Image (cartoon, rainbow, N blue to C red; front, side):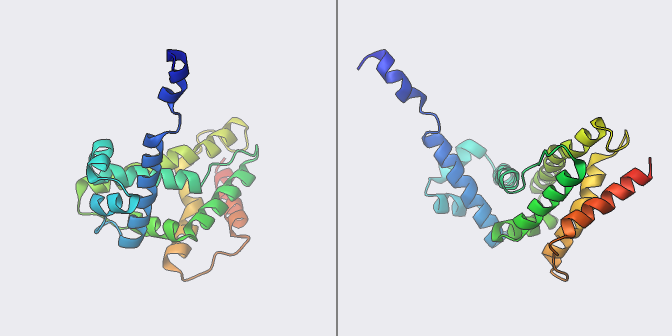
Length: 199
């Protein structure tokens, strides 16, 4: 075999490392959803993913970093940030994706875990980093709306998203009221009315 022939083999896009990472992140989300943050451990994740603990420690180092990476990967895939060109449609679509994600066992488990305070400072910081990252990612919805003059300059993206998402998270986690089919649109309208009313 020539060196040219071997080159594609060496590159191996999406090879074993990518498969191992995906397996570990899926396993981490499952363990987090089933056991909660207090009982979350790398040994359980490694066993479920079918890899050695040393493999997990070598890549992530600590359980806090693994929790953060798993939550970010899961929520980014489960709650995509829409870009329809219209702020109301974007907000409603984001709210609907959140509701759908929280209706899954993994989504509910992760949300419950993230809602709990942690006595572990490093794990608490991982939760804060998760929320900051998600707000930063979704904040582009509001930023684009400001650029299109759909919202006033200076609109606080994080506050707008918190107002949009809090009712859905409360209903999903506490279960005292259902999430009606038209709730995402009603929440988008309420948030926009409030933001535009201050202009």
